[in-house]
Figure 1 (cartoon, rainbow, N blue to C red):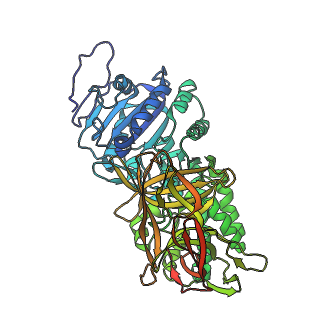
Figure 2: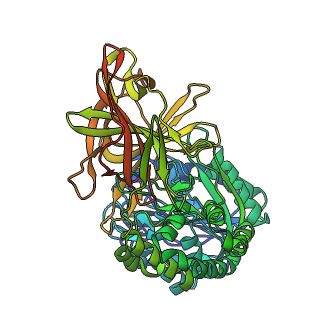
Figure 3: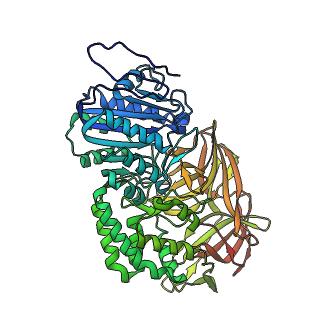
Length: 638
C-alpha cells in the first residue's frame, strides 16, 4: 500500500505525492504545455491476465523518450484491477511513470500524485474527479483524452475488475460536462466504440474521435509510434496524428480482426439529422412483414461487429454497408440513402480494416438482433439517435417478434424452389451430425439460385472441417461452423462457439475460423465474451490464438422441434490443444451425418428440404437414406 510522503521543497516544487484519496496540491497551475495527453486506463482483467496495461505504458514511455513537458505532458489515471499496484485508482504524470518503470514493474512506486485504493473506476464520480483534477492542475493549448479498457459501444465502456461495474455513455458525458472538459481529440482504445451512438455522446466535448467498429486485440493501440510523432512535431495536426494512430495500430501483424477510424465529431449533427429523415421514411417498412424482412435483410451485411451465435446476433453493423443494402432493397428511398452515405464520407476522415474483417465504412450503428423493446427502453438516451430513426427502430423491434413465417420450399426432382415473395430469404446447404433422432448443425455454406430460380444441393463426399491432433487422430473435436463472409484476404470466415480454458482463464468465446481455399491456410482466433446483467454481450479486448495446453469445448445447435426456441446449444467436442492440433477439411470421423437444403428469413425460423443421411465407417461414405422433404423446424441466428 502506498503511503504519503512529504518532501522538503527545494529549488523546484512538484505536486506533493499523496495517498488514501487525498487531493494533490500543485503550484504549477500556471504552467502551460503545448499538448496534454490525458489517459483514463481501467486496467482490469486485461492487466491481471495479460499485463496489457503494463505493455502499453512501456510503449508510451518508449515513445516519449526525451520529449519535454513543455511540448507534451501526459497525465494517467490507472487502476480498476486486482493486480497488485493497480487497485483503486492512481494519478501520475509521465515523470512518475518513468520513475516507477525503472525497475520494470508498474504500480510499485510510492511517489504518485493521487491514490485512492477504494475507488471504483467504473463510477462516474471517479472519472469526473480525475477530469476535474487534471483540468485544475494542467493547462495546454491542445488536449487529447484516451479511454483504455473494454468497450461495448452503446452499452458503455470500462469494466472495473473488482466491482464489475461499467461506465455508461451517459456517465461519461455527465463527467465531461460536470468537469467542464473539452478535448481536441477523444480516443477509445477499446472494443466496439467506433459507433454512431458513441460519437453522438462525445460530440459536445470533442472535435475528433478515434474508435474501432470491431472488437480490439488485447495489445490495443501501438503507443510508441504516435507518442514519438507528437513529441517530434508538437504542432502536428490532430487529423494527421489520428492517421498515424490508425496506421500504427494496423502494423501489429500478429493481431487480426482490426478496424480503426478517425471521426469528425463536428459532422455528427448533420449525419444524425439525415438519419432522422431516413428513419421517418423507413417507417412504412415496419408496418408489414414483407417490409420488415426487407429492412431485416439489410442488417445481415458481412460487416457485423461483436457477433456471437449463442447469444443471438451481433452488437452493431457497419452503417455504410447497411445503407448500401437498404438502397438496393428500397429504390424509392435512393435520395435519402444517398444523403446519409455522403455525410458518412464527410464524417469518417480516415479508416482502415485489416484482411480479416469485411470491408467497412468506418462507423457502426446498433443492430436489432440482440435488442428487445425492454432493453432498448433501459438503454435510454445511450441507444437513441434521433426521433425519426428511434421510432423506426422501435417499430422494427416490435414487429420482429410477429414474423414466424418460414419460406416454403418446393421440391422439383433433385432441385428446389423457394417461395420467397419479398426476395429476402437466405438459402444454405447445411451439414449435421446425427445423434439418434437429433440433428446437430456442424456447418453451412450459402447457395445461389440458377437462372431458373432453382437451388441444387452440392454432391457431398462426407468431408467437413474439424479439429484434430495430426499425431493422434483419435484426439479430435467436431465444431459447429456457421458461414459468415468472405474477407479481403480471400479467406472464408466461419464462426464457431467454444469455451476456452487457459490457466486461470475459463471463458465463453467466439472462435473465428479463417479458411483460404486456394492456399489451404487456416487461422483460428478466439474472442472471449461475457453476458452482462442487462443481457448485452461484453466482449473482451483480447483476441486469442489457440495455444498448446489450451482446452477447448465446442458447441453446436441441436434441432428440437418440440422446444419453443427450436432447439438448444449442446457440447459436441472437447480437445486439449497440442502443437500438432490443426483445423482439417477431411472425411469426418466414423458416425452418422446428414445434409439438407435450408431456407430462412432474417428472423431465423427456417424450412428444410431434401435431407440425405450418410454413414461414415473407416473413411468410407455411404448414402443410406434420401428424403425429398422433412418437417420444418426453427433454428437460431447464424
